[in-house]
Length: 109
Image (cartoon, rainbow, N blue to C red; front, top):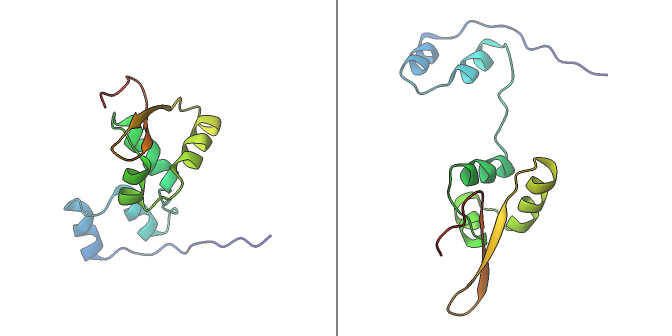
């Protein structure tokens, strides 16, 4: 098993100023010091955060916001693994039907 140890280093004055000005988070500062890795937010996490904030999402919204082409797969995964209880209401548009996904109260569409 290959384990890499990250060397601790001194942070620069510029990096510290960025932190104090709010340009860097505490996690990013710790990463710069060599303490820990910063976890990148996945598209699945972004969709879940969007829905938990009370907003709805459609397949087209997901593509525009997150460049996500298969929202239904992400919703299925979230319902199975994170027990998110995401619901869908079908809407009849001008030319096609589409699903609007939400958590909690049914949206007015």
